[in-house]
Image: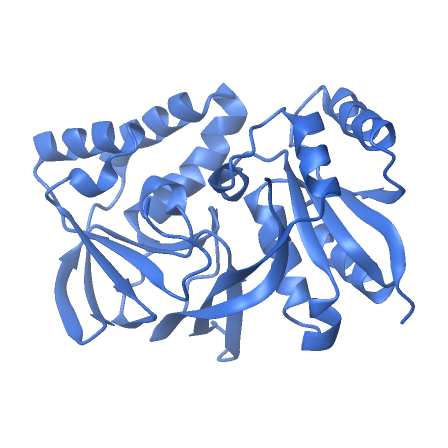
Length: 310
């Protein structure tokens, strides 16, 4: 496979955005102004991202930049983890945030809409080896499956909220409004699940509202997690009383989630779920097929080359 020095750009338009052409024009102009030689494709839908990233890999591109959000990045890293290590080590992955959720880009200080600064950062090709989280599970067909993640896996109520957030963000546009509306809808959701899991040497066997296993910020639930220490941060939330639930919402929106007394933080290399009582599971902000039976979440250290800012 011959190396391709051009950048491969995958543009993932936001759903329902009337200005998608204007948005790409801004990115294209910045790439050209900064002297970047690139090839570009646009995804037709969420299901096409993995196919297009795989095409880039097979054609020998050494720099792949996703103009999209966390879901598209998730697809990209899963494509990279399917190829051999030598091929993967020759590729650097970058992002220009353009999704409904851009938390992994925000972790590195990239701001939505600040395209020119981000392109200048990417051009410097400052590469950092980053960790990925990994969930191993059995699907409904009885097959052993694995899925990598950059941000987090949510089990329980927050996975439901993240699903609602994706839908309401399209309606409201505002990150905060979509969260608030999602929390209002909690009145119609199941609030807790009987779970049994093991974190380090501790076994939890009780009713739990939600669990976040974070490789990075975890959408505010694992704010101290970093994708380069070989560890996962875990936030376990027991069901608080109603007033405490509203307090938790406030702290969540203020970025002080761990200050809530119902939140119990851990740091570990692996979480084993023996029973999650059919709780909804979300990965990097979108729902996944709920695992059947037991599943494990662990971390693989320094497996992806990621382009980071100064």
